[in-house]
Length: 232
Ligand code: CA
Image (cartoon, rainbow, N blue to C red; front, top):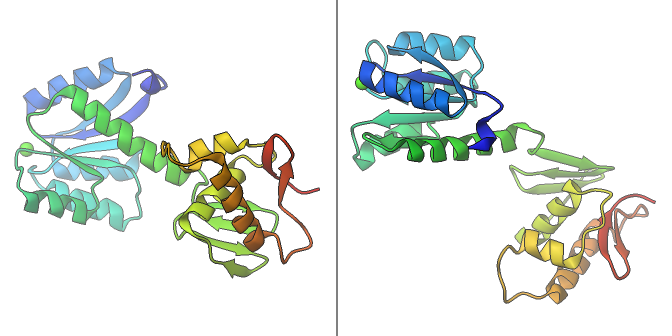
């Protein structure tokens, strides 16, 4: 749990004192700072007033239920990850939670380990989104990671999923020479049937779309080493 050492802040909205006490203690032992709200009204107020890394909320609460809290926060534009806790385990309940805008859902009783794993996943997800991942720019080339669109010099370029993956990878590493093996590993993941020749093929396709019609080239071959995104 090293990742949590730099104090993450959690809001726990739960009306059952026993659950609150044990969860608070366990979360604090894992390096979280925990605020508690024993009812939905207070929970929602705290969530709007403070910045949290994660909100963990029960569904059935006094004054305002978990769904309402999630909906309210999402309507206000909050992207804070929210995990709903509940004793109800029907699919309908689950869908209702996701529909309201919850990131995850945990059925009581659960193991602390499971909650920690979920926290890890939902916080990683939003960190990725919030930190400049949505849009990347290099010179006149713009990548939108949400809509998966590419624009160069104001003109949209249509890429396949692999081409987009390659471009994204080069762009995240601009100025750094990436070997074919590294690109293969990052863009094709574990697919062992694929060889580095495939990287070459896709790189050619990509360059035809990104660079061919433009005087300023953005992708360069460094012979014997790999590829790099840069300007000369
Ligand atoms: Ca409850």
